[in-house]
Image (tube, rainbow, N blue to C red; front, side):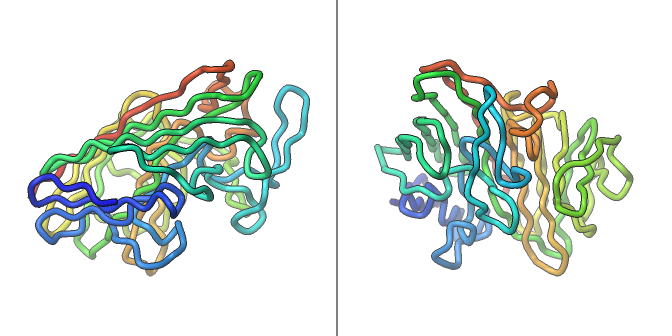
Length: 273
C-alpha cells in the first residue's frame, strides 16, 4: 500500500507486522528504508501491546503468571503487533488479535496515517477486547539513518541504566555522555529508556531536519544507537522497558484497561528540507 502527498511517498507493509517500509520526500529517505523481509528490517513498526524487553519472557498480572515467547535472545520483546499480519482500511492498518501465544489478552490495534508533503502523523489506538482488565502500552519504533554529522537533540529528566541482561536496573539523572539537551552527534552506544523527555526530538541530517513530537501518553523514549552501525532508532513509547514486571512502579507506564477501554496517542514528524 502506498500513500502519496505531493512529492512524499509512504510505503506501508501490513503483511510485515504493520510496518512502514519506507518514507521518502523528493527522493530523500526520511526513515531508514526497509531492506529485507524481516519486520525488524523495515523502516518502522508498531509496538503493541507493550514495548521493549520483558525479563525472562514472563510477567504476573492479577495473580496469574503469563509466559511469552522469547523472540530475541532470553527476552520477549515489542509485543504481538510486529509479529502479526495487519489489514488495510483506507489510510489505517488494523489488527484484531484474539489472544493467544503471543499475548494472552484479546485486543484491537489501529494505526492511522496522516501524510502531507512535509509531515507524517501516526495515531496509535489500542482497545481492550478481553473480557476483564488487561495491561496495555503503545509505541512506535522508527529507524533513521545516522551519518557522521547527524545531530540529535532532546531533553529528559532521567534515564534507566541496564544490567548485563539489558534489563533496567537503576535510574539516574542523564549522564553527560547521553545528554542531548544541546544538539550533538550520538557517538556513544546507547540502548536505554529515558523518562519524561518532553515529547520533542530533533534529528538534523545532512540534507534535512526532522522534528518529532509525541503526545503525553508517550512518557518514555527509547534511544538505540548501536556501535559501528549507520542507523539509530528513536522510539516514543508509553511504557518503560520491562514495565510489565514493574506495574507497581508509578513510572512503569503500563495502563490497566477495562473491557472496551482505549489507550491512544499521536506522534507527528515534521520535515524541513
